[in-house]
Image (spheres, rainbow, N blue to C red):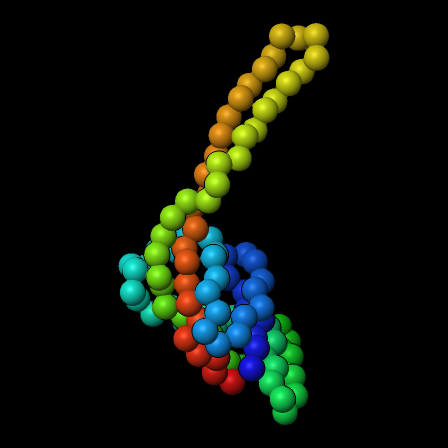
Length: 103
């Protein structure tokens, strides 16, 4: 069974037991999270699409840990103007494990 759900402005396709990195959410490590904005649920019997969401469907997940991604460099440059700006950024994330998918 798989599901496509919406969280933090992005869409994710998941199956049971999958580990996923999403944008940072305000939960504690070890807590349960329920994503109810499910766009599609599919299994061997068929696929159900929502308009826009599937009613009664939910994806249950457990928060594993928090962290920061790899550092990316942002370099701004304007020719002939002596303008150079160097910046770095590390995006925070939440690691979750999918516990179950409810139809």
